[in-house]
Each structure stands twice: as C-alpha cells, then as structure tokens.
Amino acid sequence: MNDLLSVENLSVAYGAGAPAVSSVSFTVGHGAVVALLGANGAGKSSIMKAVSGLTPATGKIRFMGEELLSSPARRRVAKGIVYVPEGREIVGDLTVRENLVLGGYQKPAAERKERMEMVLDLFPEIAEKVDRQAWRLSGGEQQMLAIGRGLVANPKLLLLDEPSLGLAPLLVRRVFDRLATIREESDLAIVLVEQNLAVTMRLCDDLHFLRGGRIVGHRGAEELKDETARQEAINAYLGAA
Ligand code: ATP
Image (cartoon, rainbow, N blue to C red):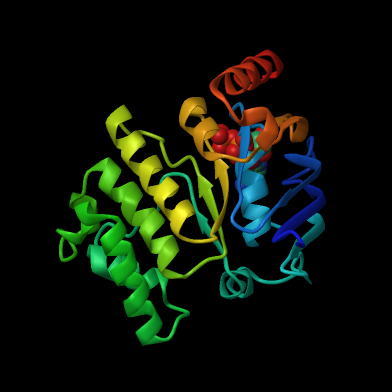
C-alpha cells in the first residue's frame, strides 16, 4: 500500500545561518507511529511545523498522493494532518468543551459532536471537567486536552510534539497508554517527537535520529521488536547524539 505521508529532501531555513532542517526524507505508513529523536535544536519541531504548513520549507511533502508543500495549513488540517504543538497551547480561559469545539471547527456539527464524545470516552479525566476553564486542569489533563482537541479534527496523521514534557512519570504512562489505545482502535498514524526514550520505543514502529537538522540514523520495526533490540537502539542513539 502507498505511504500515507512521504517527505522528501525537506529543508527549513529561518535566516542566513545554517538551515534548521537539511534534506530530510522519511515516510509514514497508514496507522504507523514514527518517532523523531534528537537533542534540543536538532530540527524536530521544524519538521513538524513544515509538514503542518506553519513554516515555509523546500522539498516534497506528499500526503495521500497529494503534494502539499505549498498548501496553506488549513488545507492540510482538512486533509487530515493535525499538529499538537509542544507546550500544548490550549486556550486557558476557555472551558475544556470549548477547546474541544475549536479542534473541530472545520467539521460539521454532528461529526464534531461524535468526535468529542469519542475523545471524552478516551480521556475520562477531562470528561469530568468539561465545563472547567482549561487553565485549571493539571499538566497531565492539559496534555490530554491538547491531544483530544487534535483528535476532534478526525486526523489521519497526528503530529505530536513532546507530549511528555513537564509531566510526572505516572501521567506520562497514562498519556502513552491512551496513545496505545488509539493505535489499537483506529488506523491513525502518528509522528512523535519525544525525549522520553523508554515510552517512545514501546510505541513506535520506526525511529529516526536527528542531529544538526539531518537524519543520522534509523531503526525499523524489526530492530525495535524486543527489549534487547530497543536497548541497543537507545545506546546507538545516545552514542550519536
Ligand atoms: P527543541 O526540542 O528545543 O524544540 P528541535 O529539535 O525541535 O528542538 P527546532 O525547534 O526545530 O529543534 O530548531 C532547530 C533550529 O532552528 C534551532 O537552531 C533553532 O534555534 C532554530 N529555530 C527554530 N525556530 C526558529 C525560528 N522561528 N526562527 C529562527 N530560528 C529558529
């Protein structure tokens, strides 16, 4: 089957200095989880922003057979690419429900309602607090809301930027358990940027190591299938970082 997303020779430059991303190529299959690992400044968020249309880039971004490089961000959302940025960026003064409605602003009301119910089933913690202002939620709940808001848009590809950031280990596990559930129950594909190697390794099918805006290593599903292989990949990554 054709890949859902194919990124070819993607480059991002913000100014005159060294490019933030240089000729990066990777693919994401339907329902696959692909992780991007790298130190701060390696270019991970820039790749996410380029794929979602929030920063200009060169190269090719093919999604479901359509070339999207020059499409505006809203067209990419409509096609099914949804970005959940680092730091969550939920609207603190709005309620949980209102934040979820925002996530589905491009959807007909009936579909949005159905998706919101699905999200609240998946995250009962926030279902209990739908009428509460978002700033009053805990960090873990805010992260669930950010992911949930992304899911209301009914994406085919979710770009998740550091979902574990600032969360206590128990909450990290809870958020990743839910991501695993989503994986099992739908054919949603995920591009995941994470610093937490252990949880990432367990979820992903494909792993790319980034340094200085370039992909410097790759591990596929075969090389991540058991704990020993995953540990070897972590060691290789730490050696390359
Ligand atoms: P982090 O985990 O710290 O977000 P990252 O791997 O996601 O790191 P990027 O945020 O993509 O990396 O940054 C890659 C490079 O591009 C860095 O050198 C960063 O300083 C630079 N950069 C990122 N955003 C901008 C911007 N808006 N303007 C100028 N330079 C930027």
